[in-house]
Length: 313
Image (tube, rainbow, N blue to C red):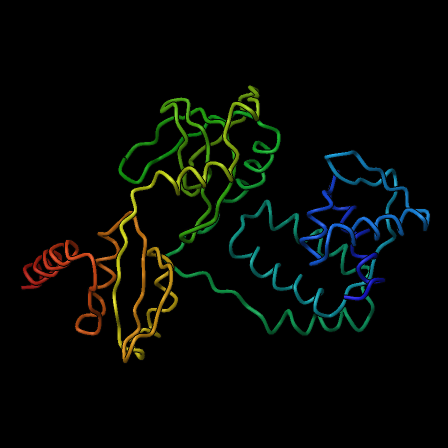
């Protein structure tokens, strides 16, 4: 990126947040802090009202750049985003995204609009049938509660229960994994942090009670704590290369870490909390997979295989 493009990009970046740290800009553009300081000084000399607070960052003082033009690559990325939002967000988020996309399209050149129209008809995202569909009008409510630090009263039906229970929770974040959205919140009933699948939330109400951010973990800190306290089992397996290709996508759902090719076999490392699920997955590959370690899982796999044989007999 040449310096003129970087200066424009820095100015746009400054408009995306209330305060932007110099290190954040250096990380994004792959430059040194000294270069960022020099670029910001150049923008100030050009008349851009950039404020600075020592130890905090830069901010714009009542200044907005006029609508910018998009490259074909940037405009194409918006279409990709729209397709993903349509499948993996609920109606409340999709409506907001569609509205924003119309506004963005309004400032595009004619050729760029035609490019987007052509691309739109040639892209699709299919959500696997086993993945839960987003719950309508829920994600926006959750996002607003997280940002506003508002306590929620939810009616939640756990997987192991036939009846829903009421939970008063302090929401700290949303995470998408295993094909669905999960609300991470501090549960007043359990007096600890819990993971709630949003498709199991039957009803939601904002209580009016606020909670303070310092009293709760951030989403980042929660995930770090989860990784550090989780009891993980390290598992090594090996497969023939032609069979390993079939496992390439599915393995990420079972704690896949890395793979190594040794001789004529592909060796894969997993870290998992749920060895039962991993063992059931390995059974699919029959004689084409070998368990390298730990040996304790061999007994678990044998038991599952015996149960399957007994059932089908």
